[in-house]
Each structure stands twice: as structure tokens, then as C-alpha cells.
Image (tube, rainbow, N blue to C red; front, side, top):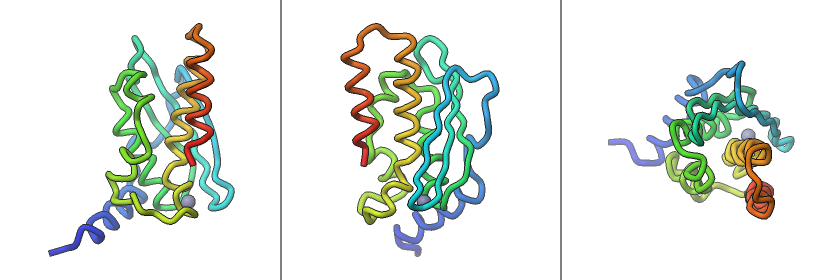
Length: 147
Ligand SMILES: [Zn+2]
């Protein structure tokens, strides 16, 4: 029998070879790009938003295995969710899916880059559609202080 660590490792390798939700959405409602220069990870996330729900989400770019795996997991989590639900996606929602809760600090940026991009995309979208600026500032802080 494989240990959990082996299973997680296998999942990460699988996702990095065959990323889920990989690609572009040409007629996206919002897109955001960010990079993790320490590792060379560079990710764009495109989203379609219908009636305050993420109707489609794709990511593209390049990154290490952890970055690609977490981007895949995150887009799977976010797809179909309301914007409020997406906003409440936390670090551990992503990390726990791949057994990465105790990742070294230096790799945490690889794992959470996609979440940072997603939250940044969300505030970019909300900035154009919401009036409550205070709420928006809070969301910007959340994205900026993720790691
Ligand atoms: Zn990386």
C-alpha cells in the first residue's frame, strides 16, 4: 500500500504533466497575471463570470510541478462557484488537496501563486463592478498578504 505522501506526490506529478483547466479564454471577463521570480513560475488566469458566478476558468503559463498542480486544483475548486465563495477560498483549501500544508516557506510561493492571481483577478473584476471601495481594499490586502 502506498503512503499518503506517495499518493500526493503522484497527484502532483500527474497534474503537472496533464494540467486541468489549462488554456486561455479568449472572451474572458477578467484576466490577471503574476509571477514568482524565485522559482520562475508565471501564471495567467482567465475567468468568465455570469451572474456573480465563475462560469469558466482557465490558467496558462509555466511553472514547477507544485505550481502547475496547485493551479489545476485551484481552478477546479473555483469553477462554478459564486464570487463570494471564491473570495473565501483559503490557502489550506488548496494546500490540503495535495498534502502540502507543511510545505517549506520557499516553496509556498509556488503553491499559492495561482491563489494570489485568482484573488487579484477577483478584485480587478469587482473593482469594475462594485461600489464598496472599502470592501475592495480588504480584498486587495488579502491578495497581497497571502504569503
Ligand atoms: Zn515553483
